[in-house]
Length: 286
Figure 1: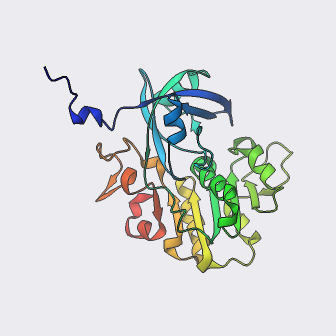
Figure 2: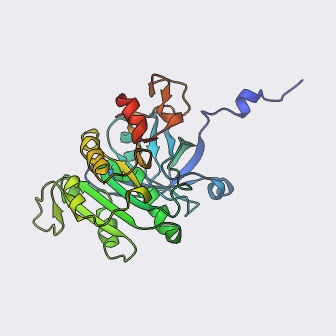
Figure 3: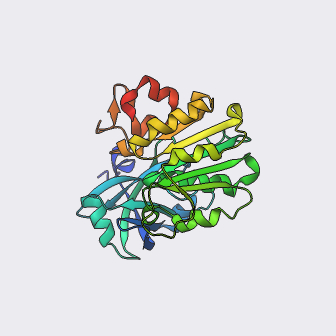
């Protein structure tokens, strides 16, 4: 009797890999940091992704959902995620304890074209949970500092207590190889010493931007894109060098369910990173 499994089962794209929760801690009242390692150590060390890609995380009995990878591929072995509690899957993840197992499949999506960004200046603009995917590319650029020109970070949040990775980014302000500007819409703590205002109020702090030599990377709430993109266009950065990640539209990761489709574009396959040119032609993307 032939016991060979059909090829379709052996290459099942929906089959998750067991992964173990290594560490968790709260970033804000409703956002938690997860550090994860694939259970098979060989697979953990051989896992390859590009900054800006995402994975599907599953919890038995609760389902699965897409999450951007917040860690950098330049530090293999561990994957890091920044997850907001918003529904059934995330509620289940928040109940999981360290050393518990979850399911993980991926990586998916196109990610940022880091090879094209070599020798260029990098301007990163993040707002709210947009810090989750952009932290990956920021850490990648810092880990490979000699491959890039200026690295500039503009990070905005509603309040100090809601700033994702606040302590990490505050410590980055001390670095000599990074221009880091932080802002909050309002300060209810009385202890905030940085800029107060929406993230676009940080743009006047930028000096001597070389637009032709600059890649701008953007992620944040939908309302933010309209105003940030206007600022980037005013800086004369080429539209194909303005990149935004729209991971909020992702669903199954492999283009089968159709939930992320806009005309002929599939966010999970053709994105989640798009250029400003893409958005001009497909305004429904944002």
